[in-house]
Image (tube, rainbow over all chains, first blue to last red; front, side, top):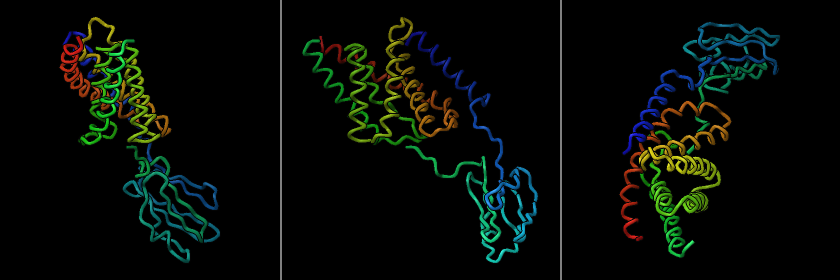
Length: 120
Length: 163
């Protein structure tokens, strides 16, 4: 071991510590958003970081959309099949809830990745 | 290039490929992408005993052949970037009077990890992987130290034999 070796190790450790400590490279947790589309057109965005509810009224009927604990779900709707109401809450990137009778789609944007990115 | 050198080159290349194979059987409780870098022992050995050109050839051969034999096309790009970057960093570091084989090996290990990370970022199209940089740097340092230790003993042995 020479002095230069130790210097290399110390510099690298400091650099790594600094990079980690300052969080410079941390992926931005800008926050997930539930984007609501009706008939393919975006009508509203609900940040998942804020609990709340939003009532979507269309010519076909209504959907009561609720955001809680960082997830979004449809609590109530007057569509004929109720599939959107039975759907589990979503929060991961590109997860969606669809209400076909009302032509409504809720899609999560900027959420945490699911399992579809694995590299060996 | 004398015959002895050619023979040594062949043995080293075969060893390097074998090392990659052996390494794949050793599980590590670390995030994906962190490996021991056993075949780097052989590349270091070649760098110190045979020379730069030979070491470069052996490194490239190893990457190409082990991708062909055991892995696949995708992993070829990862290993290739890692091995190339690591080789150039080590070849440059070897020139320095202030660095022993430990320093060279540690820098090489780190360069390997960083090269692979860059390819991962390119292939996945996400910069999120750079979040792993500090972890990979420290891992490269640690494995590089171990590899340097092993290489030091190997070099002493091989040099005795060769003369």
